[in-house]
Length: 181
Ligand code: ADP
Ligand code: MG
Image: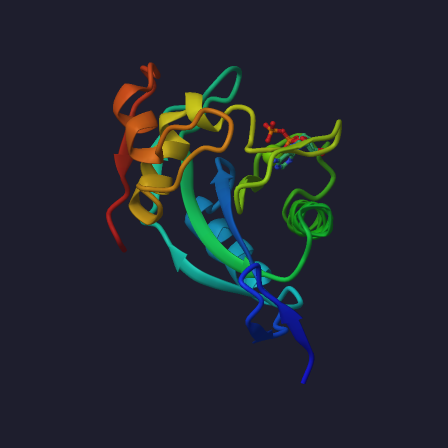
């Protein structure tokens, strides 16, 4: 057994402390509910990763050019993957699902969108990966499902809890609970 020394010099067992990560899932094409569940199953299959909890599914009014309402949800993961490694795996899942479902069509459709919202209290500002997700605090369709799982978690850059961010968000787009089927 390996030991490391805690700040108070007690010997404590060396363990792999998993990262607590929240992922936002969105789909607005095809069978949106099935796409969401398929993505969750694929995430469950990632190495050294487990889904701790998942939010309800919500339906949200589309942004920008999209015409179909989105199905949005959030899952909480415990993973030993580092954020960069996780992003790579999530992109591979998006691509695998896209290729399978949109035969002969150009990529760009939102069959599935997997975003890393929060990873522990990390702040990452790379070109390819920004954590917390730069738009999360502006989007009701992210904050509402996230608040189900993590109302007291603090946004490390804004210093406010998810429930406070939800209470003050200025997003007029509608978000409604999707009934279980
Ligand atoms: P969006 O989710 O912003 O609508 P995309 O899903 O097409 O758009 O993502 C575009 C790029 O955003 C990805 O290639 C990825 O490298 C980058 N990105 C930066 N930060 C994150 C994050 N926290 N989670 C997921 N992707 C991210
Ligand atoms: Mg994305």
